Image 1 (tube, rainbow, N blue to C red):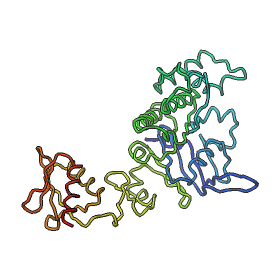
Image 2 (cartoon, helix red, strand yellow):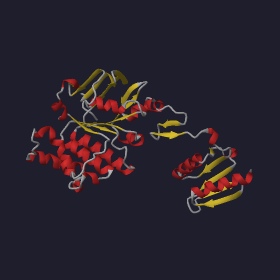
Image 3 (cartoon, rainbow, N blue to C red):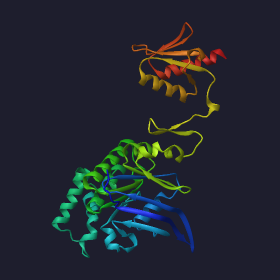
Image 4 (cartoon, helix red, strand yellow):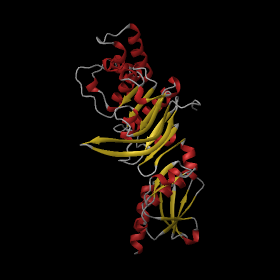
Length: 347
């Protein structure tokens, strides 16, 4: 998956900032590595220091202590010109410009190479065209930047960073304002860019469900515990993800590779319901609906007050009590309403 040698390593890094003659520590004793050809995602709770860490790795903030080794050299030993050719950064800030075309925005990525006058050579234009093609924004090239949707703008900014030609791309919550299909599309794009261009791509995000499916590597950041790193499956197998977001009503399912909500027991109704049927998918959907509605599902038919049979033909769901049929329906919603009505009539 990765090269044997990391492209970036942090060693006992302490992050933070200085303000009004005071030093504020955000993260400390952080040790981790990034690799080329991988999409690595940084996750953690609000306020744990994700943005501060990203800005430190991007050289916008200086480390309070520790080392950042990038391509075998300490980050502090790079000049500003060298850094502009090494690191491309995509932030969440909205680009507020008028009368600037997407092509012109992407062309701004060539600024580290164009010299004082900013004249683009034929090779610069070729790199701009390649970035536009690679990200898939050809149809947007002549559009004004201010007319773009959030998803289109993120793509344009990534194309700008690609035209910059840097081996490292850092992104701060690039999916924050995108709808779900746009989030998926952006993650797929970044995975493809990491693999095809062998770039080191590192981003912060709160989209845990997508991260666990699509990230090659995770950095789990915590102010109390520092940083855990590894591929998602190893972090699950080691029980780290299960404990990473401590909350009384949140648990991690290793089988589903997802966090699930545990309903408060005070919301659960005393009525026990059994489910019978051969369609595992429908049984699972019905269980979810009943659980969310506060009903207790039991695997013991003798313990159940009522029984729901799932049929292969219409009506799909049959609600019974002993030998009596209480309701036939094809909709889970109507089934839930029927169970609630039965409870009300029995009270």
